[in-house]
Image (cartoon, rainbow, N blue to C red; front, top):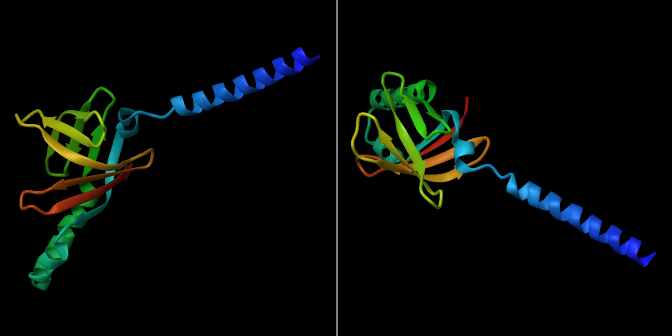
Amino acid sequence: MINKQVSKAILAVSIVFLMVVTIFSCKPSNIDLISNKWKIEQIDVSGEAKMLSKMDSLGKANYQKQMDEMKKNTSFTFTKDGKFEFDLGSSKSSGIFKFTKDGSKIITKSIDQQKEESVDVELLNNEKMILKQKDAVGSVVKMTLIHF
């Protein structure tokens, strides 16, 4: 009788253990999470308010129009085989990408450029990706991307 109860307890613990291992081993990799077509939900630029304060109303309107068009016309596509395509509306760029070992950065190399570029990954999940990078003038650009 005791052996049956012990056997049942061991079986129950084993089943729970296997369920926990299965749940945690199914966590998608960064490649799985990024492999999709993304669009811009939001763009934040450090120093934007200061820059806008120096513009006249026409300059502000043009800047806002450019930002709105970028959100509307830009897409980022990443594939599981390590390739990417950036469609910026008026131009396209494609190449290869990889994550750093710790997953904190994406390293890209465009077909038409010889140097690698990196972007910080603040968040990457099934629904959203947040990327951060310094632009040519030193402002920090933070983009929030969502699936199409």
